Length: 235
Image (cartoon, rainbow, N blue to C red; front, top):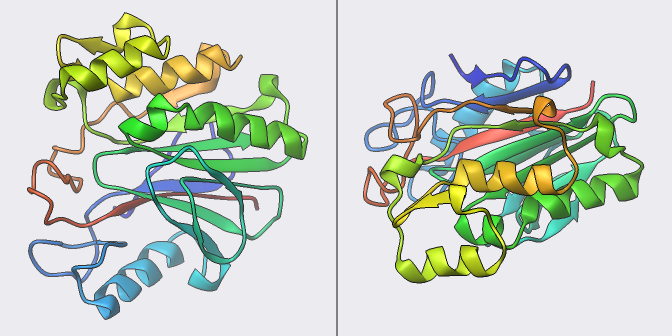
């Protein structure tokens, strides 16, 4: 099973798992990124996973991710930032993750898509809002945008410093986004989407933790791990 899909997004998309690739331990097996695995393994893994969605790598816009809230207008190949938006058909936009949350956006009426990489810094600086705003600049409507939040590290497994919790508090996040020093990135990104005018019924969450065996986890694997993608493309 290469991809897990959201039931309410009706265009080509998916959140990758660890299954079906060629990489050896500790990247076993569908590693789609990072700098430690052999490039030829990553290339073959991408080929296999993308073929399952009828996408070629020469159609993919992806990112050198820097834990920012920067949104890029998608171009084929690699850009620097943490989110992508496009209204161009046959450009697949992809974000990588290994504990951070991949979030996909789709306006079926106006045919506009987005993808965001949401670690704690991007979440704190409301990259989900910035992605929505950039989609609106393309002509999307808030009432039409469907959001899918993929796998990421759960609150139970994500203890952070008191300073980080204070930063979220100071930024106006609901105190439902943490409990003591356990930060709930899923809830925090959902909070930003709701604050941006997205209705709850427009938001789907996978509700799975990257520490589960189907996924790569930077924390679980002490930094030596693979990368998963969240990807979306207009038909």
